[in-house]
Image (tube, rainbow, N blue to C red; front, side, top):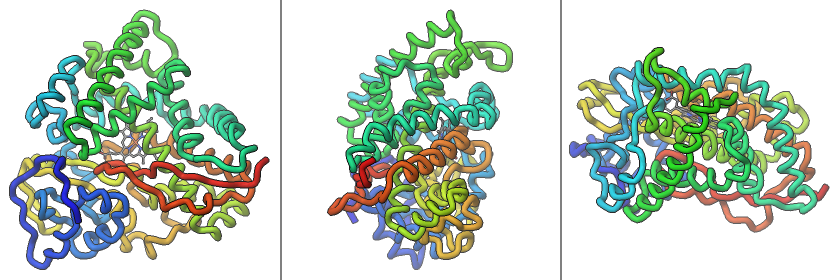
Length: 432
Ligand code: HEM
């Protein structure tokens, strides 16, 4: 397995426990392991559900039970992981990156990167925008958008699903919710890619400079829009954020507003696009399941859960242990960096029999942890589920004889320690 020179500096207590030597041949930063983590995940779940990774000292948490335990204990396992991400004060930020960062607002911890009570305070400001009632009301808009996107390629008999459908659908939905002009969508995608690169944990200093330039561009754009919304509020999430008062007192400052928007932008796009592509890919790889879903469309909501379980677009997430503790028999010192492996937990055979089988009728598919659990449970869960269900419904209905493009290579996954999603999915179908 190759090593990764750009990996995050972590605890120095690296040591593989007795009997774990073979696990040390895997490296979670290896792009091949990230693309196809299944063998490693199976081994971790079976042999070392809580594991001190030999190369980095990272604590990997993999079984469904242990991942659930970590997610439910935010007092021990903190989300203040920005310090490890090259964004915080204590991280070793390359000089060239620091220069670019100086031009923008400093990274601050809001929802995903904060702990209660601060996290709750920030989250309550945007919660309303993502309530079940508000999200359900978006159904007709999402349906119209899906129809419009499919109209764009239905006569061609072929499409590249990611760029022609899976990316623009959630991107348009979230930018409309944020009240951003449609002509600025391309900028949105570019900025989202910048954030994803910064989050990847795999970026070289040059790539980090590029990513931060995009982030600063995003900040400047939204600084202007937010100032406008402060004076001319509309019925959109931007106005709600900029005019909110923290505990009835002070308004959010610009860095906090930008951090919230950044999280909505990235979380709302990349993950949902990956889930839509992986879902269609799984259906094409499993023609019986595809036929079953066509025959029983009422199974679509369950299929969405099964796709989330199998795909797990947020494959991993960071935590920092903030108290000396023990988990699964492993001593963990305060300050240790941890990687919660959602993709492993979602194929834990204790919870999901025959876990690598894609089964749209799986009875307990919704026990997956692909959307997290506990205080950080995905804010956009209802929106993501609705977008996926409507996408699968529309694509199956409108594209007869849907199939993989012949001779298309297996999907490629760009290196990213947190997010896993295929770069493209060429499909064919009978032209309408
Ligand atoms: C299939 C699509 C999605 C997946 C797989 C996904 C996954 C996740 C996961 C695993 C977490 C928990 C992270 C943790 O425990 O540290 C999370 C949190 C979050 N998600 Fe999603 N997400 C998706 C879609 C969305 C959408 C559409 C939005 C909003 C537009 C969104 C916004 C957020 C936010 C803001 C958080 C942080 C919440 C907090 O810390 O309080 N996500 N998501």
